[in-house]
Amino acid sequence: MRITIKIGSNVLTRADGSLDVTRLSALVDQIAVLRQQGIEVLLVSSGAVACGRSVLHSMKNLKTKDNVDERQLFSAVGQAKLIDRYYELFRDHRIHVGQVLTMKQNFSTPISYSTQQNCMEVMLENGVIPIINENDTVCVTELMFTDNDELSGLVARMMNCDHLIILSNINGIFTGNPDDPNSELITHVKPGDDLSRFIQNKKSNAGRGGMESKYSIAQEVNNAGITVIIANGKRNNVLTDLLIEHKTIPCTIFENHQ
Image (tube, rainbow, N blue to C red; front, side, top):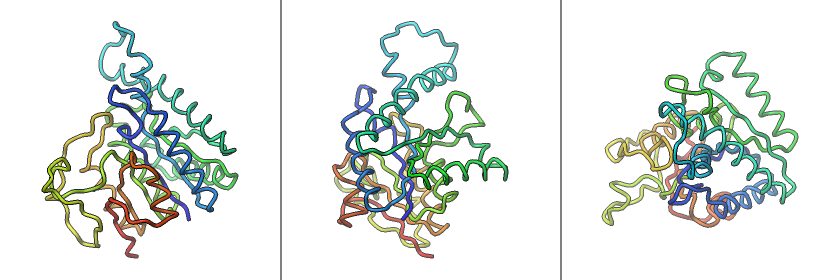
């Protein structure tokens, strides 16, 4: 089995914006178990900008002209911190990782597409986990992905994955506001189901995406024959429960219907 796992910013950051190393470590431990079971993993990880913000939070007078400047600064600092954490945590499991920073234009031309695809294929063949993120230091405005949900969907299709796991800070898609006790979790989505009336366009606190983006990407990826699961990345053992133990946990599954 080959899967893409997307970890959202709200999974990896605490309420104060700092990196949640405990959660990150727990997810790495689970990915190590997946690897032991012969599952190939591509990891699309958010959190660089949030990490950079937490590192530089004590600087009261940042020398930036606008939000773009600030995002580039936080990304440059945060990506270094994030990949270093991943390197250390996976090293404890004797697993090598490699960083892949990409841009939307890398998916738009055949040469760039095949070069990027070959890079990640070689990494997987040699037991290296690709840790993929948008290159926020140079991607601004029209050059940006909508969010890492879009990037994870492109990676899952590019690499012919069996599953795309999108980890957020809620259990999946609900029939209303997830905070409303009358809202119900939609656990399975069948081909042709239209959930648009349930989707709110509210953005997440730490990231750029929201459930509207996740639903749109899940539909596109599922139509390509890939099972998509939206689950809560803050839930203990979420990955191993889903893929190893095959437990029924709160999540939304877009079943592979091809």
